Image (cartoon, rainbow, N blue to C red; front, top):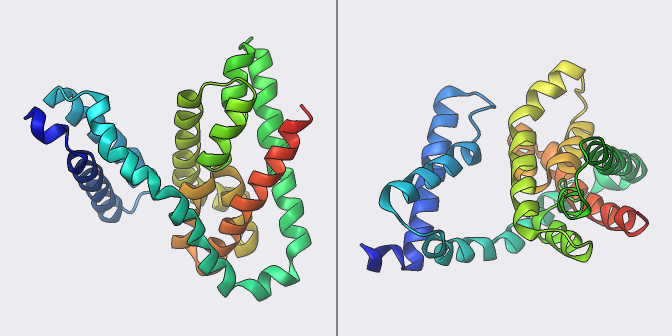
Length: 225
């Protein structure tokens, strides 16, 4: 059994299988809260506990999947290119929307950390929670944060955004596709963008733009904090 779990294929196969189950449940129920990522994570943890597989063994395959994060993010450029005319006409509103979202994210996180008396290390780990993982980890490291905490918080933020965004958009009466995309991408980065693509092509493209713009704005904001 150890020979199987120590192979990178084990981590890859387990991840794909768990996500496939999550995707099946999501499609069968049609519930936003039944996010495939939200289902896959506990399934993977349960499998590792039941089989007694060390996390290091799973990570051999997990690192291979993690390598695909960059190309997957870059692939969003295709949907952005297809909506380039829309983006050209509304670049300033998109920029201002991302700026407002980033200020709200960083400001609320900083305020809550102070209210609950969290130390500087934890605060630094939480501040970049709404940007894509590669940027968030680097920002966290520069401020003395813990990369593992940052990664967990970024994943949680993305899943929460993907699961709750459709309901919140309806509740708040936000029906404009561009506004929906910018809001989702700014708040919940790549995972949210995957959900935005399901809502529509414009939402997906604007969310992809927001991921990049929000990353740049967050870097600038944290530079002056």
